Structures are given as C-alpha cells and as structure tokens.
Image (cartoon, rainbow, N blue to C red; front, side, top):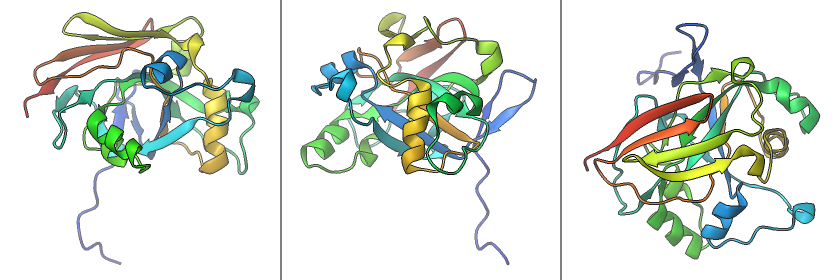
Length: 236
C-alpha cells in the first residue's frame, strides 16, 4: 500500500527529563468552565457542587500545539484571548470502560502549563446560535505549551497556582485547589465519552482574568514551582 501524500510528522512536546525525551501527542482534550470565577466572568452560572452535572469538554487538534512560544495572530478574529491552564499528559491507556477516579492518577505521566487561545468573537457568535465552538477554539497555533515535567518531579499539585503575565503585567492567577473538577474527576469524565490513551493531553481549564492579546504582546505562563514558558504574539 502506497501513501498518496507524505504522512505528516507526529507532533511532539519536549519533556524535561530524561534529557532529549519527547512526548508524541495523540489528541488534545480541553475543559471549559472549570474555575467558578472564570465561569462567572463569562456569564455562565456554576451549578451547586452537589449537583454540578458534567464538565464542558471540547477538543483541539494535535497540530494546534506551539512549542517555541512564537504565536502568529490568527486570521478571522479581532478578539484573540488568553486562557492559562494546567496541562496533564497521559502516559498509559485507560482500561476499557469508565475509568475509576481512584485509578486515574496512575495514567498521569507529566504536567505542563499551556494557553487555550480563543477567538472570542467567533466563539461568542457560535454560542449565540447554539453552534459548536470549533472556529473559536480549534484553530492553528491555538495551544502554546511548555515543556512537560514528569509527575514525580512536579510533586503534589495542591496549593500550587497558575499564572499568566502579559508585557510584565499579571493578568491571571488561580489556585489549582479551586478547580471545580479535579484531575482524577476530569479523566473519569473523559473516559465516559472517549477512549483515553497514552499520548493524550488534557488542558484543565482557566481561572478568571481572560483578556485580549495584541500583536507584539509578550507573555509568560507559569505553573508555579514547576514550570514556566514565555512567548510572543507575532504580527498579523
């Protein structure tokens, strides 16, 4: 059997250790409204924790990742917004069936920090018409990401914060303890709808403070005490 076109190269994310290691990416899952303060700033009511239902899930293509921090300003929008997020890298396939949250931690290989870039005007237009968010979320270069840090090196996430600075100004900061759905709970929820496999990344949702990025803006995203990365929004 002969390919009619050249096969695209696998998308890989650098891993801090061992030296030279990379993480080949299969799929990117994303979580919406996973910090109550962000849900409120977007005009969405958060359910009572006892009856919260299920999280909002969507996907980005693997080739939306940006490893070098150089982010072209996307076409079709005048409202490019930043959303800083914890990123979870899955190192083992989940067993068949719905994953028990108590077993979810064994699947986590590494952590990073990323940006879920959003064409907010296109997302808002889709929401108003009851349409999918793909044009607002799943576009080229919409997922800048740090290197990945093995979970054993990162240590416990409790008490750690996400932050984002733009041109030196703090725009977003939120404690991971304030996630509406924890990492094990999100992996459980994904497994209800998808096959969760080695090579998957999960962007876990953003705290309040999302705002516009302009060409020339420089940003630094951090999972405090674990990893950070910097980048720039390139001219249109």
